[in-house]
Length: 445
Image 1 (cartoon, rainbow, N blue to C red):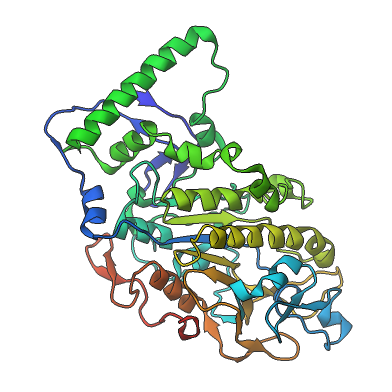
Image 2 (tube, one colour; image 1 turned 180 degrees about the vertical axis):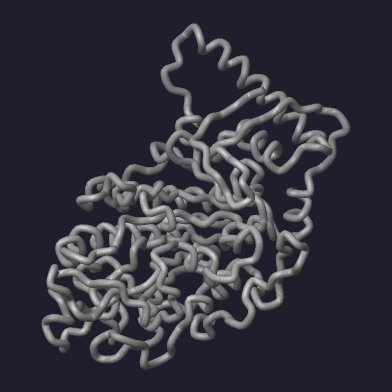
């Protein structure tokens, strides 16, 4: 048996799956074409649409980013000033000059409503309510897309999670729910990433490693010629695909990127916050890795970025965290446009709720569920606009409230899925609609 070790995790079905994969002994007779690849070829379209979701853990302050209120009292408006953007009439925070300069390529939603108030990625990741879940739990959107489409390239998982492991466990992605571990997001991080590289290999071991690579190459050629064993399950297929191709490792290897492009994204700041050691770091290189992954064939990539739960020192933290996000986010969107990928890749930037209009005694903003914000780009959407508005203190939506699930429906639409008619079966075999009532945003075309 060939085993690649990673840190064990427990899931709702009580199974334990390592971040990477194990390959058991296989019989290589009675080979057939995998159903996994058949679905993609049957679509008759070799192109694919993708999503990069940037999850702003903890709830970003809408009043300090895209919905500033300069005429409000000092205890509400805060320290930051609005600046004009490339779109006449639209202003955003002075901490986001790069976004301001290319606002024509973004959509700012200032009236996002429907937060269930939980400090969790669940609502952003699944588009479902936390309560009254079916057996096994609701799957995240990336898992649904993995189920519906499978991978574009068998060597690159359809659904990937580049997020760091965060101490507050609900911030981490909820997983595949009732769709099962075959559609869990692949996490090429930590020990799993180390498993994909050859380190500390001396000359005495190199020969055996080379022999192993030759065997993998032989297996790959046989699989390409004949297909997979009939009894090979999804994990075995994925393991073989990943181990016999360098495509995923190459996509994650940022040394292969043009240094000038890498520089655009800015420098990683693992100490951007006083509590960064708990998994809340500004690793902006992950934005570039996400672009390389969707270019390689990934359908859904999620990144967590820093943390915004600033009950104190809101402005001190904002001056560090928001400019780094501004630079990396705009580098990503610029990159997509320069590569002609802007119609096929959707970028979603949001968190689970907003922050209180009134600044507290510790110069922080507390949890606020009545309204929050989000940014969208790419996906062939009509950009260069603001959707919705809040009242004079940014307390609640007064024009065009946009529900979280409308954004989720838009994501599905951009992935060529009708969320109100498409179903996936739960563990009882009952078909579940992706969205019961919420439709995509008509403003986005």
